[in-house]
Length: 140
Ligand code: CMP
Image 1 (cartoon, rainbow, N blue to C red):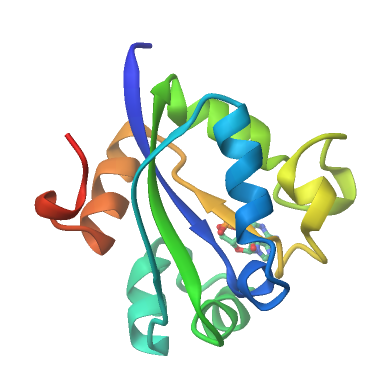
Image 2 (cartoon, rainbow, N blue to C red; image 1 turned 90 degrees about the vertical axis):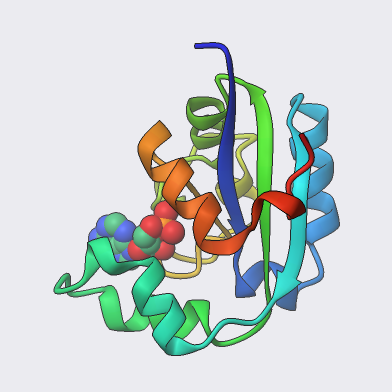
């Protein structure tokens, strides 16, 4: 395990409803440190590049349109076992089956508008962090 970094995105359904502060409070209470964070809006092309691994899947187009539809908050979270612990606190991808107390159970509207994204492995976390942040933007 040890200390890890993971990439988190608070998606357009979170920024639109003004709940990014509430989500950050949940994360900080759970022991995550937000060591980089910015609110940005990305283009459809950038969303397609970020979610490239899902290209060809039936939900790909809607997913990329949604992620580029409004502002998002991208952040680097640090904690012991951050990658798996963040996946736990996010809850299941489909909020209909997300556990009580998770971010998606509390906020997500649907599998498409599911409020948050988190990296799924150490390798993905590294690639995803570099996609959005330069070294200078991440607290050491
Ligand atoms: P996320 O963790 O950001 O990664 C890919 C996203 O695709 C996922 O959250 C969902 O919002 C969206 N998605 C829509 N349908 C599906 C599906 N059937 N399986 C996985 N992800 C899906």
